[in-house]
Amino acid sequence: MPYSRIARTISESCTLKLNARVAELRRQKVPIIHLGSGEPKGKAPQQAIDESQELFFSREIRYTPASGTVELKDAIIEYTREHYQQEIERKNVIACAGAKQALMTALEALVNPEDEVAFPAPYWVSYPEMAKLCGATPVPIHAADGSFFPSLKDVEECLSPRCKVLVINNPNNPCGAVYDESFIAGVVRLCEARGIVLIMDDIYHRLVFDHREPLSIYRHAHDLKHLVVVNAVSKTYAMTGFRTGWAVADPELIEVMARIQGHQTSGPSHLLQKAAMGAIHGDQSCVEDLRCKLEKNRDVMLRELQAIEGIKPTAPGGTFYCFVDFSRYHPNSTAFSEFLLNKALVVTVPGVEFGMEGYLRLSTCGDEADLIEGLRRLRWALDPHGPTTLDLVDRQLVRDWEQPTDVY
Image (tube, rainbow, N blue to C red; front, top):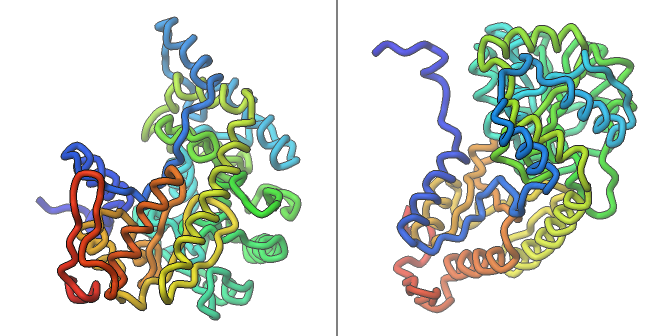
C-alpha cells in the first residue's frame, strides 16, 4: 500500500513501545524493574473520582464543546491565577485529550510544511515526530558546552527565518533540567522580537526540587500573541490515564485550535473533564506529597548511581527522571538499553531517542525499593569484577559477558 510521505517519516513512540513490552513481560511473570516509566505511582485525587462518579452514575455523559466545558475552563482559569499569578478568560483556554493533543493541535494551527520547529536537546521523544506530522522540520538545539543547558546564544543561532515555533519543556524531560529565569526571560524576548511562537510545555511545572519555586512564564511576556502554555493533570496529579490537558493562548489561536480539534476528536471526554475539574478544585496536598516523594527518590537514585565507577550523574532539578551518560560502558544507547533489559531485567530508555546518544533515561517515579533493586542489578551488570551470579527472588541471573559491548 502506498503510504503518505508523512506516514513514512514517523517513528513509533519509544516510551510507549517499552511500556507495552514491560506489560507483556509482567504478564509472563518476569521480575522486571521498570526504570523507564513516565507515570508517577499513586492514586488519582479523591475529588477527581467523586466529580466524575457523580456524572458517571447519572448516565448523562454527552458531547462537549470542542474547546471543553465551561466548568473545566473556569477551573483552568483558577489554576492559572493560583499557580502562575496570571488572569485569563475562557476565550484563552482550550481543553484537550492530554497535553500531547494540546501540543499537536497548537503546532497544526501554527506551522506549514517546510517551516521549522525548534526545541532544546535533550528533548521529549514526541517533539520531532509532531513537527514531522505537520510537514515541518524539527530543529534540536544543543548546548555548545555539551551540558543540558543551552545558552541564549545557542538558541538564537538555531532559529532561522523559517522557524515558526520554539518549544521549551521546563523542567525538562528527560534530564530534569530547570532553566533559570534569566534564560526563560531571554527566550521570551527573542521570540517576541522575531515573531516566533513560544510553546511552554509545563507538564512538570510544579514538580521542582531543592526549594525552587515554579516559574511563571507570564511575568516575562508582554502579551499572549507569541505564547502558548500547555499543561495537564497527568503528572502533577498522577492522572496519566485520564488524558486531560489544556492550552492557554491568544483567543484567536484558541479559536483555530478548537476548529482543528472539532474535526479530529470533537471535544474531550465529558467524564474525564469532570475528573480534571475535581483534581484542580480538590485538596492539593497530594501534589506536595508526590513532589516530596520524587525529590527523595531523586536523592536515592543519585546515591546509587554515584556508586557505579565512572558515572557522574547531573542532579535533576525537577520531574522524575535522571539522564545519565553511560557511554563509558557502551556507545550505543539502544544496544545498551537492550543489554540491561535482557541480562539484568531492568528497563531503561535509550538516550538517542531524546537526541543525545550514549545516555539512558532512568525514572524515579517508582517505589524506593524498586529504584534500589534496579540500580543493584545495573551495577552488577557493569562490574566485570563482581560475582558471576545475582540472586533474585525467584531466579538467578548469570553473567556470561565481561563488558556490555561483548553482547551487543
